[in-house]
Image (cartoon, rainbow, N blue to C red; front, top):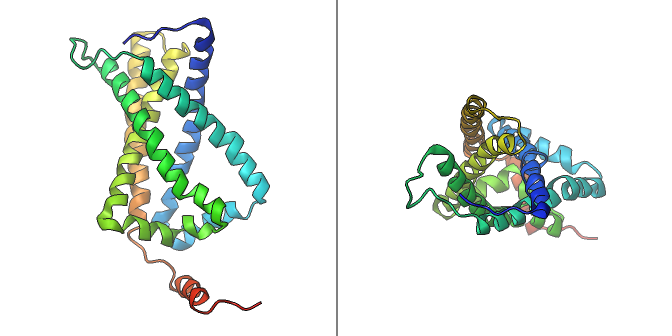
Length: 236
C-alpha cells in the first residue's frame, strides 16, 4: 500500500485517526450498548429515548452537532479522500498477508459506511428533528421498520453493524500503530488480537439489539392512543 504524505495532510491524517476513536468510535460503542435496551422490551428502550428527549432541545442538538456530527463528517469525508488516493497491494499481488487484507477491508468498509450512514441518519435523527416527532426512533417504529419489506431493512442493519464493528475494531489497531503506541511486532499482534475480540463483541452487541426489536410487542395502549389521535383529531 502506498500513500503519499506531505507536512500538511500528515496532521489531517492524525486527526482523522484520532476522531475515529474519540469521539466517533466511543459514540458508536455506547450507541450499540444503549440500543441493547431493546432486549429488555419497549418500556426500557422507550424510557431511554425519553431520557435523552427530556433534555433541553438546544442542548441536545448542540451536543450532537459538536460531539458527534462534525467529527463524524470530517472522519467520513477525509476517509473517502484517503481511500481515493491509497493503492492497495492486497488484491492481484503477492502481498496477501493480514495487515494488507485488514487495510483493504478498512477502506471498503469505510466507503460502504459513508453511504449507509447517510441513509440511517436521514431516516432517524434528521427525520425526527424535521417532524418534531420522537416516536420515529422508538421501539414500535423500529419493530415495524425491521419487519417490513420482507426483512430488507433487517438485512441492511445487520450488514451495517457488521461493517461498522469491523471498521472501528481495525481502526483501534491502526490508531495504535499510527500514534506510536505499538512499536514492536509483539505489541502490534496483541492489539490485533484485541481488535478481533472488539469486532466480535461489538457485532454481537449490535445484532442483539436488532433481535431485541423482534422478541417483544409494542405497548398496546400507546399504539391505540396514536391510532385514536389519527382517527379523532383533537379540536382546539
